[in-house]
Image 1 (cartoon, helix red, strand yellow):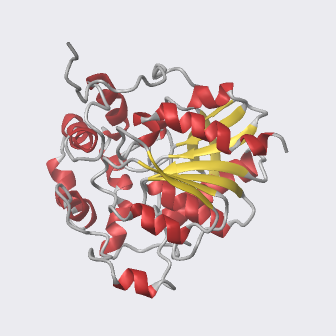
Image 2: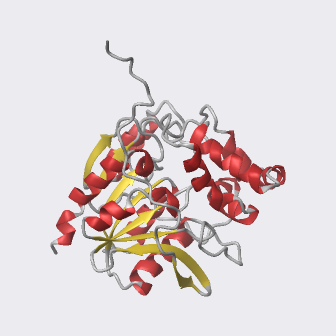
Image 3: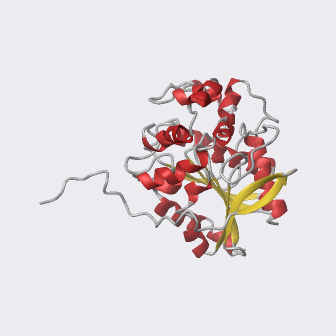
Length: 324
């Protein structure tokens, strides 16, 4: 007798290394501000892996070793204010600061004139700014489950959309955008213990319809939420949401124009936070693309949920850079 299909019957994923598996490096990138980062496979073609929110470099734990074994130098930083990176004494957090920090780390500190990039969520937006702000720095990009650049010279398509362009589009659990952006001080007062802060972040992995069901275990939740136990770090991670409500930016990020570097577009369709027209927006925003490709049993945290597919595609996509 054939057993009924269950969502728990997921494709096997690469083993998850222990929390202490990789050495944490530190480097100054902006005055005295230091980023914490992992650097493995030194000497191979450099791949920069950029996390988003509510993530840290830990979201890439299943990708590092397979990419190193394929011959790449894998660079996995925490954005400023996250994880092992410094908080900013001047409270400067936005996409442009993130982008400039990463360029300083990879180009100036580690000495790579160019690199490949893999990024999703906030990291995806940062990758677009990196590609446009520093021409020639990003050789190739893998982009997934983020907000693609808005290309305003496509007025007919945008006018025909049924959903508004407002980034606060309604969705089943979307009130967090208002709370983190507009009412963040009150929210932080409610999250007044490390346990409550970690429980709040866990909801994004568990109940907020971001991930495909059964993508994370209890030990995974503990691993992912630990960096957000600190109140200052949790508040710092909300800065991009506050900019929708008037928080000042250093400058406008370069995400209102096309990205011309070769880009592979991936999409985890079980994600309920990224607009469902993600693939169409990507077809407009990326002029030299492979895809969009949809990954089964996958939501927002594609690099963890389907590490098996992402690792294989990345090895193939960046292989041409290894031979140069």
